[in-house]
Length: 112
Length: 111
Image 1: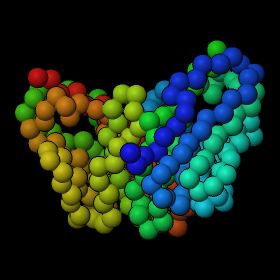
Image 2: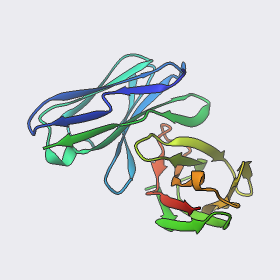
Image 3: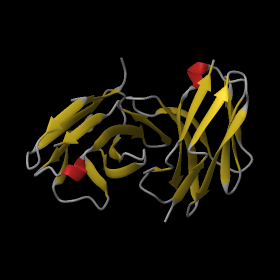
Image 4: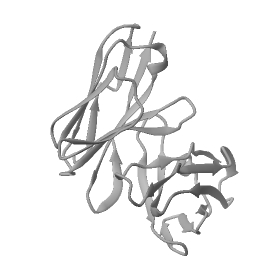
């Protein structure tokens, strides 16, 4: 299946821990994104990579660090997790010239 | 700063009862306006892109229209399977392709 896939789907962890979320797309797209969806359903851009180069870095704590080993993968590493980091994180991809995104199914992060 | 406001927040319809969802936006030059459908526990699923005022697009029971200040998603004779949250987003020209989303309209269609 052609898709954007994220792992894990659920992540429950304690405050202060470090965790990673992985994302892979097999659509051949050249741009990948991380969005955060809060409890009020707002989706906000966090990061974007185009061909492994960081092109968007919104006001996000330094504890969040994206890594793109190749244009099909974009991972999100979070250090020293805080309660306020609890949210659903979505990965998405798009292709230059085609403005639509394809989203993954999300990772629900709960920090306790 | 780009802004998107969707109304109503929630809408309950009887099966077959047509209605419209509203998306008002302010953006520094519109590259595209997007409609997505989001089911619980899933990622947003692309529905439409509209690029200029006056444009309309249709898909089954859904029709999206665009003016210079707002977009409407018209749902004709909805069915229970149309129940979902509908998200509107804008992409500004000159942006690095990020989308600015509204908070969505949660639609429930009762049988």
